[in-house]
Length: 388
Image 1: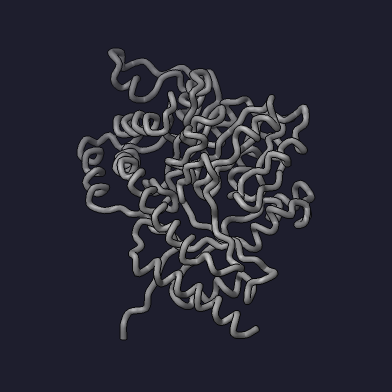
Image 2: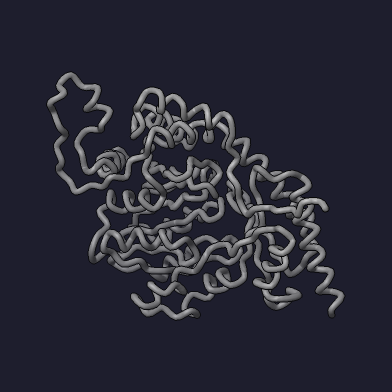
C-alpha cells in the first residue's frame, strides 16, 4: 500500500547551507551574541530599509523591548487587536500597563482603525499594530485614529511584507519580528527589533544586554580588559546566539525567493478554490506586499456543509494539517478573569477565532501536495452539495 500522505501546516525549509553555517561559530568558540549576529542585524536592516536592527531571543521579548524603550509603564494604556497571538497583549502586561483590546476587520484580520479611534483615551501611550499572517495593518488609518500614540509594529509574521512600498519594520515607531519555525525566516527561535529612531535604538541595544552601557563585543575587543560596562537601567538578558545568527543569515538570503514561491501557490489556492462559496479566501489589497506567512481562510457558518471543526477533522483524517488562524485574546481565561471580558464583547475577533482555518502553505510543499489539499476541500464541498 502507498504511504499515506501527510502535509504539515508549516515546515521550515532548511538544509545543508544552514548546517554548514553553524560550523563557524562552533569552531571559533564565539557562541553567544557576536559577529554573526552583527552581520545578521546589518543585513536585516538593509533588507527592511531601516536604520537599526537589534536581535533578541524571540518576538515576545522584542515586543517587550519595544514597549520598554517607549517608556510604557503603570498607568498607561496600549491598544492591541484581540485577534492575535497572546504575546501581543502579554508584552503590555509585562510593563505593568493595561492592554486595551480592540476588534479587527474580519476580511483582513488586522486592527480596525475605527475601533482604535473608539478606544483611544488620554492614557493611550501606544498602539500595537499586528501585521497578521503576513499582511500589514492599515498603518496610515491607525496613525490618524491615534495621532498622539506611538505605533509598535508586531511584525512577527511580516518579514518581507510591505505597505505602500515601505517594508514592514519601518512603518511605525518601532517593530518586532519573529524567527519561529512557522515564520518565513527561522533559526529555531529568535527575533529582531527594528527602528529608524536613534534614541529608541540605543535603549533597545542596552536593554537586551542587562542594561549594559557597551556591548559584549565592544568590551572583548577593547584595549582595557579590566573594564566592565556601567549599568544605568534595569535590563534583560534577551540576546541572540551566534549559532542562531548564522542560520538566520542563510535564511534571510532566501527570504525573497521563499515569499515569491508562497505567493505563487497562494494565487493557485485562490484560483482553484474560488468556486467553494462557503470558504472565504485571503486577499491582497492594492498597495500591500503580502508576506504569505500563512494562508488563512474563513469558513462561513451560514453556508458551510458542516462546522469548521468538523471540516478540520476530515482534513486531518486525510493527512492535511490545519489550524485556526489564531485565537481571540479576549476569549482566553486569563484576560476574561483579569478584565471581565465576555466572548461577545468583540464580535469580529470572536468570529475570526471560531471560523478561521489556516491550510498548509510553506516552502517544503510539492505541487502534488497543493493539488491534494485543493482536491480534499473540493470533495468536502461536493459532499455538502449532495446532502442538500
